[in-house]
Amino acid sequence: MEFKIDNISPLEYFGRHKDLEKDPDTGLSSRLIAIDYSGESEVFVTQFEMFSLFDSCIPLKIQGINVEKGRNIKEYSGYQIDRLRNDINEKTTQWASVSLKIIKQAEIFQSQIENNTESRFTFNKPARELESLIEHYFYKLISILDLYASLSQVFNRKSPSKFGQQIAKTRKGFIWDQEYQNKLIGFNALSALRDYRNIFGHEASIKIRPVGIKGRWVAVIVANHTDTNGLYLVTFLHQSRDEFLSYSRFFEEHYAKKCQYLSVFSTDNQL
Image (cartoon, rainbow, N blue to C red; front, side):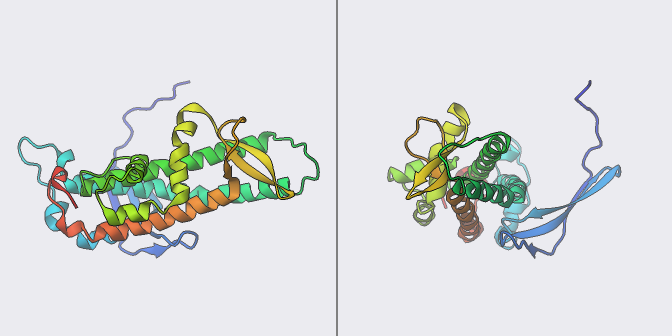
């Protein structure tokens, strides 16, 4: 069966509704997006707007991109900001659509473990499914954080382009934006997620195991069955979600204050 399709109708129109609404689950702003595929179909979607403050503070010289001879559009601050904020908006919308559902499943799983009166557990399909969902949750969140790091590099070329690199260099005392880094290092769950990134991405898959703590069973995330340390499943999911939402709000406010000082070319920015 043929799985590839060519020559589908191209995008003709992409429009954003001017009004923002508050999402009740996250407190984030969202807006209605209209997408027209050359008259063949029109799709309306709700998308989070993570950078609404940028709209009023980015100078017109940055928004209006006129590519000079011998230059590439990717060199322009305006292009980089627009591309990255769109990617972050899209990925955050997708992540938020499943995050609470995954946490709810984890809470149900934790409740089942707590009620087990024996030391024998059967982790069949539902448990394996939860492990897969949590891994997806982590991958998506890490992907978003890396996009945020790339966006911060547009404002300051000294800033590392990966979230994990930002954490690592801050720990080593490398300074490029003291206010940003002081806030960054306080996100303990996001920092822990960074530490587990390479393990889950290249070496192992998430595993859930029961651990006896003070007379009760708790669900713990580990990378390997031989691990002697791990992460409390439910607590870590909640805290990483809360920290990400806090980080995203801080990021928008922090860099909105710098927008007016942006240079046309991203390589010139040292904000």
